[in-house]
Image (cartoon, rainbow, N blue to C red; front, side, top):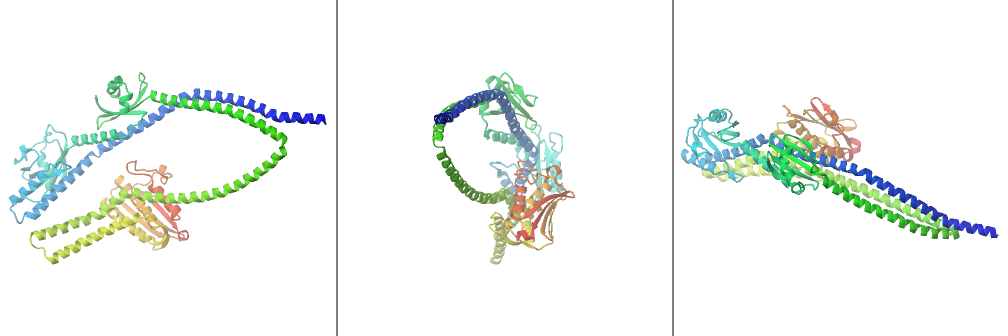
Length: 627
């Protein structure tokens, strides 16, 4: 019995001692291994982290500078177009004002008085707070009104510009032959090239004209771009600079602080005749240079390695502190666990059966908790699914709002003709009143005419307002009627771009659908087709909308002759944020939302196929699934 009791005591001692010894050994081994591993890790990764920091900063700098270069190139390429647009608007206002004065007074005042009234009005016109220089010349070459006082009242038909061209005769020929047109000239030797637009007045043997100097327009565009760069937020890690030959146009605040005076003074020399990345070893600085030829700018992005060294050292300090805390925690936890294990071992040796029972109870308790957790997770899954559907509907609505710019353009096209007609109605009433011909019957007729125009414009607004209302439930809709309504929304916009829209609605079948979401999809496809033919400058642009009925589907196709979709992007065209229009024109959500709406909300499928010299987007809506 004593031997048995002695053996039991040794077993009890071993139960208490062995876990403590084992735990101590494991603590020493794990702590030593962990310390050695972390030291090795810090030593090996310093260089790699620095290399990654520099590579990432270079990518960011290249993107930033290339974006500025792209914007400058766009501004340069669109400069002539912008100038011509401004000239169009100036002459439109000038000629309309002169025409209204002529119509109002030519029968009741002398020609001399009417001419003087017109010239006074044109002389007083302003354009965005500046004088709107409009000149008037007759077809004999007499200068009636000019921004240059030394030319007023002279016959300048024999005037030659700085290149020896008979520029006045060219103006006369363009105005007389074409009614209006543009001419580029250096009117005087001391001035640069300017674009002039002339337009026939139609009365008094006159034509109007105005011009803008290209160099002044370019300088204005450069100033606007520079202000945009200055207002953009800057990263702490990098700096940006704009140089024009030896002159410094802009240095970001970070660059002023980071760069030494010596480097800042030598920067214009560093960047001349060399683009790309350069290293300045004496300053441990990297700079990226791009030259914008049209602006004669050097754009510089740079950063110093010292910034990243400080960041890396700060991160390493934090990591070492965290590492030391973890080591301390391991030691303290090991001691606490050792004490706890000793106590537990003692208790286990005494009351192993009780522990087993407690363990069984614990298992039952955990099983109950697991069942409750499963029930809770099922409820959470249902909530998350509902939330996902709600977010998806919100995304669809946001996609509609993203198209608001296009909608405003469509409204403008719908309203342009009614507004023009309303202007004529008001002018007729004014003229009738002026000549004492305004009778109650005539006024009533014009009021009815104006009311009809306003009702049409109000109806147009209602159509577009209803488009932005999210559908709450499916409704029975005739698919061909939805297509006709969609066409009515975009018809004016397409006509403005001289795009032919052909419809072939062979089916009058009805389906239960979300009307506005289907309208959004078709509107998006037609808009994409319009952008394709416009961007590719198609000579005879055409879009074909077709609805046919098959055994199991209602098939809707939108085809264009805009050049089609390249094979390498067909697989990506329905992915979110993928766009072929560039960041300035496309968000990449249109076709993704179209696919989401068709496949998840309308129970259909959407595909794209090549079709002759363009692309066809095909929507198949299942009959039985949609009902």
